[in-house]
Image (cartoon, rainbow, N blue to C red; front, side):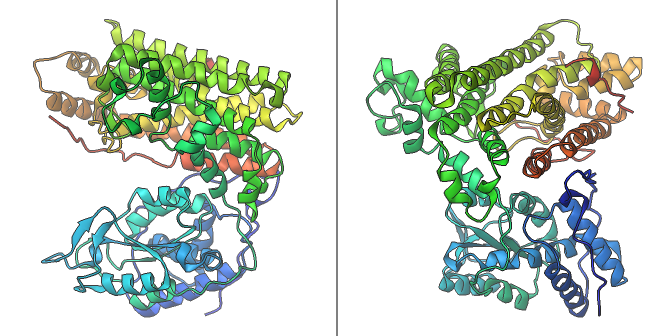
Length: 616
């Protein structure tokens, strides 16, 4: 069946045009076409349309959805197939880029649920399900074929380590099998970053003895290695550069430690007490800097610098271009993360959090005085990373970077101070606008510093300061609201319990919205709940959730996220050059990629005036 040509010159691809990306939810659009014939027809249409598109840049999700909706309309098929068709279309869009990657540099990701649920004899190892010696289902067949071709194979449903594997440099492309829900969650970030990826969706999402179009899986595995006609831009080289700075050897080279002696890892788990007392603080700092995190702030600095100096870091020769970055550029990006890690140590003390990056927090492990001192040390280290490179950066540039960092540091402390004062106050009243002012001070400055430092390093004469400040404010506030919503679902990375902000007495926009929208009786009960030690934490949080739901808090918070997202996109719309504008869109999509459910489940374990918004 012939498909009408689809214009690939979307709004985002033309300089000066506004991005028309208002995130549409597709959770209800995930029906799998029931017949193989229909699936083949839609797949063939995806091949035809993808062949005519410009593949020089990744296709944003909103643009892809528009293409897919037009495609389905041309086939007289319902919108309920949008989710499934987007996976097939993305696979065809990226097929040439996957082909450009040798088989031994591809990762093959398989789901647990292809195994037979009853009586599966395979055991789990550190890499997922060990299917090599089993043969009871098709996983073993796929794995054997893939491994014989040189693939790395991982059997782990929606594994969070997939992106880390890519960033670490072990593989350059991903092919996978999963249900639509998992594909949406696990692959979105990968595609946004421009990492070649193909997938075949499972035919059902019940994750129990499911099935898949096996010939499609074999076709995907056996995509031959060949050079593409067009190379798609990718942020992976910049992501790898940011991550590589925190590898022990490179971190040591960039920081240039002042104290000799063994590292914390080299004292065989005996802890800081086994180190030389004078060297211990420096060793603890380097260990914490290298531990965990997404390194999104140093990536942002490097990416802004790249975008304003030609954008070659995302092109075909990006790895070579990024490898030429001076140490002074890298150290400035490293300083951003150093300040961030220092604030985390102090935040954990102030909130008495038990875990960070899946490990016991510094103050719980070594004591509060040592943790305070460690955070202070990392603040000094961050400034030294810039000041020692003054000759390379130039006095004026170095001074402006240090001033930018100092300003961000002071505003962040003001925001944290406001939160602490509210937490310790007897009066728990809070207006939404005041909560948003705290967010703008507490969350936005570090992000703004990462953006501004990238601009200053690039040496451009254009003044981006107002744009970066407003962009960082809108993204930072939206991110913090998302973080509030995430608190009601728990956090497996840091082992947080749901409702932790309520139990910890921290001011949130959710609390402020509830106080604003509840009647007087419920408002009084809400305030009493947070200090009522006669009730168990589980019952207190459960009741607060009920009151939040009565007040429509979760829906109102999601609307605020979208409002601030829209404001950030409006700032990005006006930015030049095009590489910088695309980066801003990418940052919005990746930082704000976790919209919370309107009714998040409970899991319990024994600014300035222009921030004003109307929650309704």
